[in-house]
Length: 106
Image 1 (tube, helix red, strand yellow):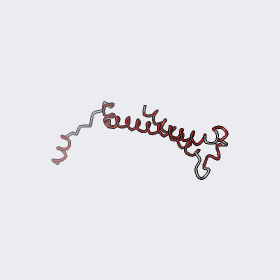
Image 2 (cartoon, helix red, strand yellow; image 1 turned 30 degrees about the vertical axis):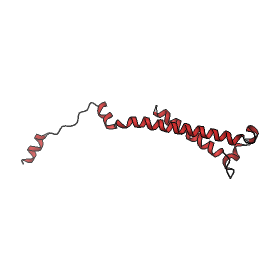
Image 3 (cartoon, one colour; image 1 turned 180 degrees about the vertical axis):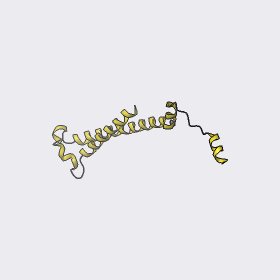
Image 4 (cartoon, one colour; image 1 turned 30 degrees about the horizontal axis):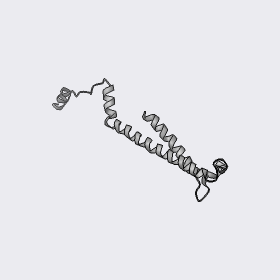
């Protein structure tokens, strides 16, 4: 689930960046490369349309970020070491005290 949400986050970031860059600013920006939007949406259409799309994408981005944060917080209580110990059947090595005692007496 988190991998799907992470991919969706990347897609939303790219779409939101494009929506922001296509909007008119004091300079032309990247809107010059999109062609004549005024003929498709009318005289004031693209500004309000792109503003609505930007708001919607921003809202989806925030909701997706909060959802990702929730899922990652649920996984926080589980450690990688705990998962490895549960999955492995290898016991911890024991220390042989008889070998150290015999070396110490020499």
